[in-house]
Image 1 (cartoon, rainbow, N blue to C red):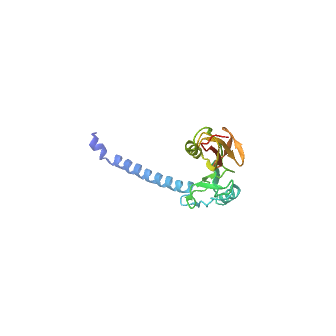
Image 2 (cartoon, one colour; image 1 turned 180 degrees about the horizontal axis):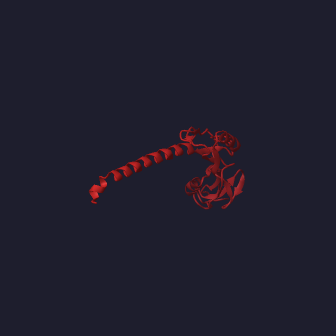
Image 3 (cartoon, rainbow, N blue to C red; image 1 turned 120 degrees about the horizontal axis):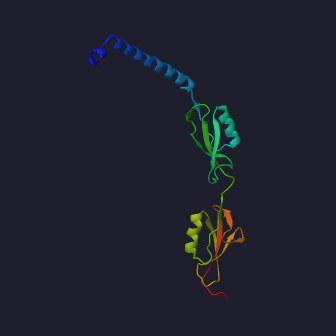
Length: 185
């Protein structure tokens, strides 16, 4: 029997039709099963957790059949209370499936501590950008008699002298005592 006769025979065409019918039926059954098992069209709305404490956020997510995962603590943000949610993923209002993990970022209890850099005997022009680059602010500037004009002689924080290597909260104001260029008497 030649290939052309076989492809045009009743037996081959009947088997081809049965195979096509089986594929269609199996595809239909598979798609129905997939809709049922994945709860197609059944969504939960993610609540807005920003600014809420972790315990309140957990209760809200449990009520919506969602799961809470603490991702990280970010840099301290003074606009939000300590240990409150400052970011969430997915965003509030998103439609998600039941039992979806909602990742949150918490506001830490305060600014992280940063090491005070070496500034003694450097000029104010060098000290200011160095302090600002690590996260400190320049506070009050006081001049005393010293031959080194604008040279950093001491660093103070809340009235107490600080040294290189001390650790202070980020955004702390460091007062500088500088030389005025006059010889001490």
